[in-house]
Length: 189
Image 1 (tube, rainbow, N blue to C red):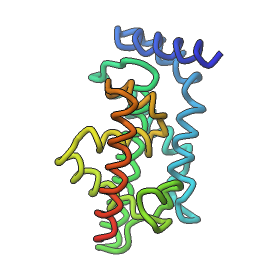
Image 2 (cartoon, rainbow, N blue to C red; image 1 turned 45 degrees about the vertical axis):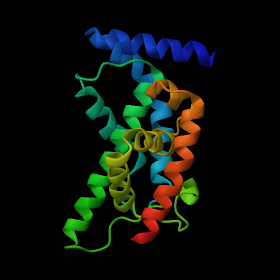
Image 3 (cartoon, one colour; image 1 turned 90 degrees about the horizontal axis):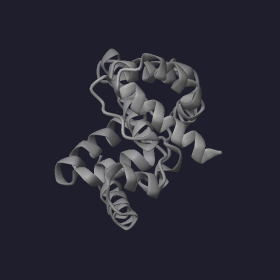
């Protein structure tokens, strides 16, 4: 059943690539729950009373996906990788806006769940993590992408390997190195 849904998602993405406007309407019910799961994962550690809600994050992601006509969708894993990247950007933009509004005050602090493998403190600063990932991308773009796909996107090793067109062994090796590098970078801050 999961394989069939995954295949249907891929077919609808390819149809959307070809300009079939109804493909998006048929796609969204199939991916909505997974997008909510991704958004919930991001939002789970937000401080109480946070003004951005899971549904709003999904809706903003959806709007940006609709505007992403330049993306040539490959498959389900690619769709969720792009969605995760959009969610990360939305939250980082939101955090930066809050910082600016507070005139240099605290960035929005979020718990990144299982980020304990990357940083020791729960409630790691998303802006600091984003900056560290940008720095990592300068040195090794693939490692940065692996962190984004695995950590933010929740993709499996196999799905990450598929999106990046590398082996699972390469993903595991780079994932391990990236965690160590990020841990060291974030301890400096």
